[in-house]
Length: 183
Image (cartoon, rainbow, N blue to C red; front, side, top):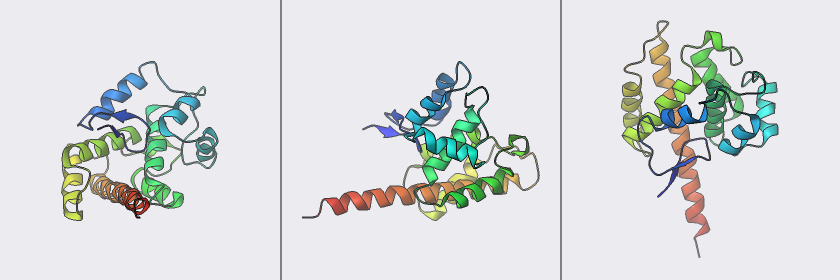
């Protein structure tokens, strides 16, 4: 059974640790990716992505190309937006990395955050309770070298929120599926 990388339309046979890293190596082998490529890989309309750039949720592409971190930011927002409001997602990302349109103040790149999250899900499964999510987030952040005091604690909290929001979306989709099957 195929599964999708969270926040994308990209299918894989199985979500395993480092899968997103390997995939992104191929996607970004020639540098950045275009708006149309981002749109296809996220299922988002180009105008939505451009709106997020205009509103400062994502930094502007350079020479019309999106970087790994910009793509990751778009994927993370896309993954969380069914469970959280956009302003809450921005507050979440700002809690970890400060100003959203300025990558120079980031304590972890968005691509690395996404890879840690997908690795966490690959190792610990897709349906975890709160205690298991905390343990998985702490394990995912274990090797993270915090550039400023308290960054690891913030990373663990962000990973917890991401997992809970993503699982809430998956549960809602499953409930809707079951509802549609009622006689």
